[in-house]
Image (cartoon, rainbow, N blue to C red; front, side, top):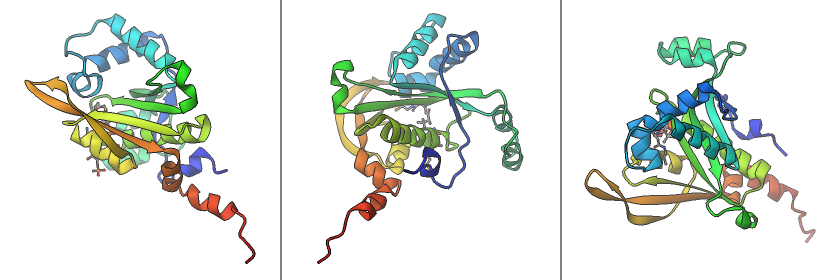
Length: 227
Ligand SMILES: CC(C)(COP(=O)(O)OP(=O)(O)OC[C@H]1O[C@@H](n2cnc3c(N)ncnc32)[C@H](O)[C@@H]1OP(=O)(O)O)[C@@H](O)C(=O)NCCC(=O)NCCS
């Protein structure tokens, strides 16, 4: 079977994933992240308000309890290069330049139903990137990495993802990555004096296999009749 590295295709991975720690560094990072008004509006759907440090510790615990919960990081030099020109970024991204990964977001794969339902092999993706690191392809790379992990290593059958209907950029990305629309919870979200839907999407195991070119491999292995 092809390795995860191979399945990710031609583009070179730029991100590093590590476990969330109960460290001052991670608490400070997540405290900033959950206080970001964009994250509060688009990601958590909680009533926007200043969150205390304890909320960051609780968020880290949620990530640690997830099936997969990671801090998305960039090699330090790449993160510094975000403020420089794109040409400089390419140079700084050369192998051997990576050190002290810098957190830029989080990704989790969690069960929506609980431990007694593991046999259904379903999970949902949650993801948020910090301000300054969105719209640069990192979200797409991280979600593809999580999909490969979910289907190749965890043996999931279905991975779902959702977004508010006004989060058009996120929905565009999810569809581009191959998620299929399933439906919507109508007027489930109140935001700025208006009602919005929650759009649900998912990817099934066989759809992922086709996207990664594995369906062909399977059919090649099927014995042909001699007639
Ligand atoms: C949603 C999110 C994870 C997507 O990751 P991302 O790294 O910004 O998206 P990418 O750069 O990989 O993908 C870019 C593509 O998606 C779209 N896109 C998604 N979010 C975008 C953003 N914030 N800014 C610009 N483009 C965005 C672009 O149209 C682009 O499409 P294109 O390649 O055809 O031009 C990230 O923007 C984010 O954390 N947003 C705030 C929190 C949030 O919405 N979380 C998800 C809740 S469901």
